[in-house]
View 1 (cartoon, helix red, strand yellow):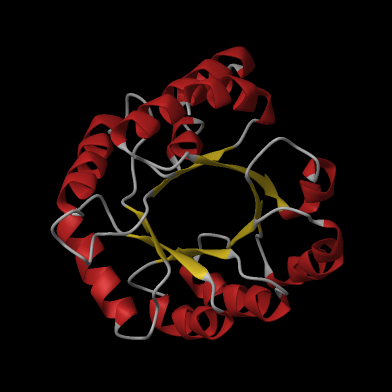
View 2 (view 1 turned 90 degrees about the horizontal axis):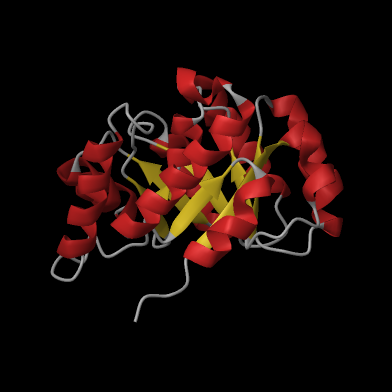
Length: 218
């Protein structure tokens, strides 16, 4: 039987203190620069649920930012996002700390498998596969099919036998249709519902107001 889907509420580091008591399984904190690392150090003692820390998305920044964040962590966490351009600089620190690492590859099951092998050779055992995905109406369907394929292949391929995480909400909220505040809620619910149906084990949510609705789905 499939385990319950984990809901991650992700917020900017500067706003994280406002969301410590939100109804989510994991609190995700996104950092934009290394100066914000001090926020993590300040908040760790008062965060009483599992944590995901995520870098800026700029590979050059994250090569130094993520190791810095890892050095501050006082418990096992989810760390991301790692890709083919920065994994050599980040994975060793995550391995030493016993953390779970989000590995992102560009919507290709073979690339996902390859990155799992490469990082596994470095000693990484705890991996979340992020196969990447477009927003609703902007390539979401292709990403959905890749997630389905990974879930089917995992039963016979140990390199794909890892949980899947999806940032479909983030991509959907970048679309022009999501500029309308009310519409953005419906689009995010649709995106999250879709990737849960596709087999995502972890879904990242950006608007805390939709968590109650998603609980009924997940």
